[in-house]
Image 1 (cartoon, rainbow, N blue to C red):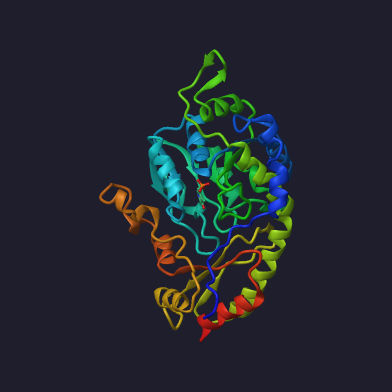
Image 2 (spheres, helix red, strand yellow):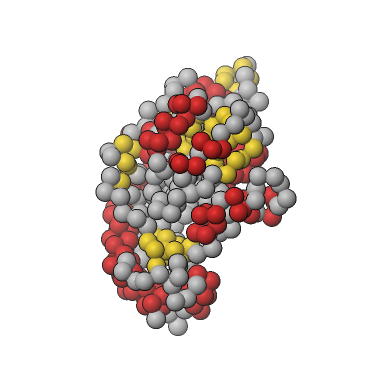
Length: 366
Ligand SMILES: *Cc1c(COP(=O)(O)O)cnc(C)c1O
């Protein structure tokens, strides 16, 4: 029996490296509340991501909710259903209404030619998602947002380390949210960050992630608790030392897949954009009139001990919790629906071997 291949495998730094990193805490007994590890990781990430300003969080989702609150958004937010549950739930949980824009076929991100049709007098923001390490059409989105005086928050959970024409994914829109969940290219076990342009947001964001407490006797916001703890930050400090090598390895594997699959009839791969430095976070394949449909390939892989993922499926506008709600009809976003019904992301992580990639491709092609 061949070894099971999972769709991802969380990176872990050498055991001793992490132990060395957390050792000081047995002297200081300072375990959370923006301690030295938190400060160090914040500085290192600000530098790595070329961010103007950065805040760390206990996960990406709460960071996103805090971003929406910090900008004081209300009414309608134009977003995409081709995403993880977090994006849509964050909008709804903050009391706003998601208005779903369709995606384009090449990047799987929001189709900018369809945004303006959705703007009403109640629209306050656009919340697009960078998907699989592709970036959104950031220039067009910026132009539309400026013209209509809308805020822009990017869900950049997939975009750690990605650059477009040399500019870091951390520098588009008003705020970008990164996820450092264990399954992401860079992780802090659970974790996340917001990067943002306007330093004036800093105080509000500090308040929102720590019960609104600005100083021992000053509680200025009705904030929650979304602080990253010291053990998470220590994991991040270790993982950041290894992330460039991880991305390099992912790139090699990505190219191995592409070589085997790029000229196969009925398979659509991610388009290659020369202006983009990707992080090779996922290897999506659209089974578009292939000899087997997506679900057949998914099951065939499964019976061969290989876990692929239907990602993103279902669309967030077809979740059970949203059935019957006006605006959530999935046929309003036909391209997203078409892709969601045909997509698989294949296993991809830094220590996946070429032999394993070949085994996966053999199953798909046989
Ligand atoms: C992972 C992810 C999130 C949520 O991040 P967490 O850190 O798991 O809370 C949000 N959006 C997208 C697109 C993601 O992939």
